[in-house]
Image (cartoon, rainbow, N blue to C red; front, side, top):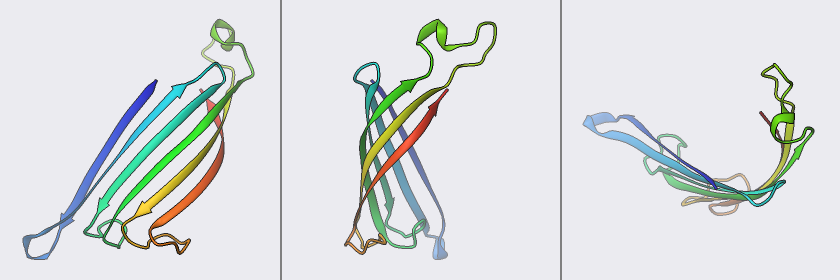
Length: 127
């Protein structure tokens, strides 16, 4: 299993000595279920209650989950590189994901009050 976290924060000075600030973070995870199948998940959180980044005082949250199918044009191990070079033969993966975004305010173009759902299909080149 592979996992990762990331966090960011920032702000600027407001009038009268105050401070406008925001904070955000993400947690990701990936588990390989077999030779050609994996599953990834991600949670994002952005606290922008002072409307510094988005212009709307809100808290945004999103959750993404989806499978990944690996395809390789070369065998694994020593046969995946060209001998006496650093060239790695291409490996390709197809990733699908479902992402659900939430906001404490009606923010998304879909017109729904604080919720947006999207699906993606990606072709990924692994190196």
